[in-house]
Structure formats: structure tokens, C-alpha cells
Image 1: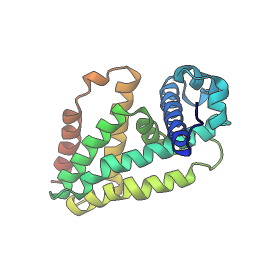
Image 2: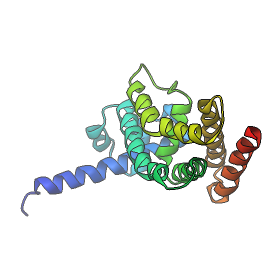
Image 3: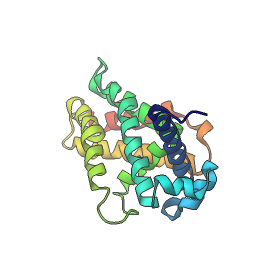
Length: 200
């Protein structure tokens, strides 16, 4: 057998890391910050040594999970901010996609909840750059959609209400294993109806 090429090794590495990060997200939903590398290895159906080869501790692993989630979320959600429609409809479309994405991808939900919690479960300030990047790439564009449409004295406060409502709704459904029963259209319509009613 001929040795693997660099491209083959890189492809295997990418596949392994993706497998490990997916397993880590699933374990995190079950155990929170108490997860251990052994739990992730078991969920990924890999040896402990294999996972440890890529990640020496759970904080490094979770950091990669959350950065990867931010990149995927940006590519899936942000195109809604460029749609040619009124800004409030953009904000509603953005909210629907955000909720849809976090129900399909546990790592995106973990990122959204961690940002809402200000990463208080994580040690030190290793996640401060991630928090800043989330604000710049996801949250501030969302606030700007609201600022341009709603005659609100505090678009940041309105955005926080929407964001918190979406995360709370997703959390209830994810933790109670009711993802198939989620009514994304209804919750988003209800939130935005309430905001518009208050602004009138």
C-alpha cells in the first residue's frame, strides 16, 4: 500500500475534527460544561487517544466548536440581511433562519446560549474575542435592521428582547426534545407582532 498523500491526510483530519466537534456539541447539550474528553470520544465512537490527539482539553475543543458555529451561522443567517425588503421583514427572516439553524445544529444553539450567558461557564477571558466577533458579525447587523425600521428609542433593547425570546424558545424545545413540534413561524410572528404593536 502506498502512503497517503498530504491531501488525503488533510481530508481525514478535517473529517475527524468535524466528527469530534459534532459529538462535543451533543455531549454539551446533555452535560454542559461538565463534559469530559472521554464523553466526547464515546459519543464520537473514537478512542480517547484519538480525540486527545486533536484536543488536549475540553476548553480547546469547545472553543473550536463555537468558532466553527459562528462561521456557519454567519454564512447561513447573514444572507437574510441583504434581502431587498423592508428592514423589519429582514429582521423577521433573519430571526426565522436563526431559530431554524440553532434547532438543526446544536453547536449554533450552544453559541447563541453562551453569548446570552456572556460565557459565564467558561474560564478566564478566552472567549472574549469570540463574543466580540459575534457582536460585530451577527448582533450589530441585526440591531441595525431594527434601528432603520422601528421608531424605537433603544433598538438594542428591542434586539435583546427578540434574541432572548428566540433563545428561550429554542432552549425549551431542545431540552425537552420537542424539536419536531417547534412552530418557528408562529413564535417569530408573535414576537414581531408584539414589537410592532408596542411601537404604534
